[in-house]
Length: 120
Image 1: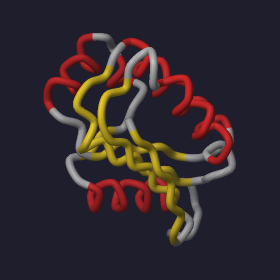
Image 2 (image 1 turned 90 degrees about the horizontal axis):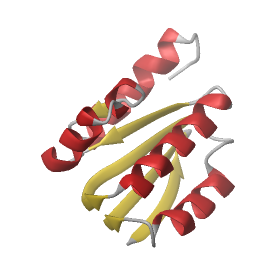
Image 3 (image 1 turned 60 degrees about the vertical axis):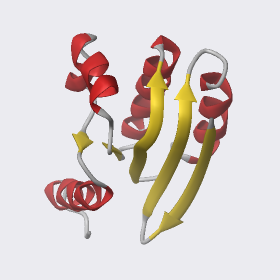
Image 4 (image 1 turned 90 degrees about the vertical axis):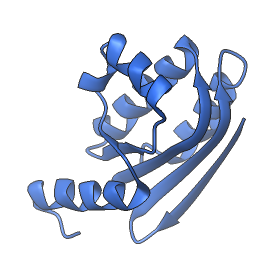
């Protein structure tokens, strides 16, 4: 599992690669909680994530709460169908915003900013 964060034009983009499981989720969470709560717009590239355990679902819930708790917006892009199905079956889709591509994610974040009265 690898995790990288870049920031450009007021958007933090998190790129995750590999499996998010009980072994990798805690270190990813620690790393992301150092940088994400202060970000207003967070786009998570999930297209290279091949497996998501219950620990990974918990990680997403913690990150979503941290970002939204600071008044921000978090969007997941490129979630593969098997992982999306797990999110749907566990009820996580009601708490998460999923889009097919990174460009769709950027558009979603711009729309969320406009709805909140912020400049894109």
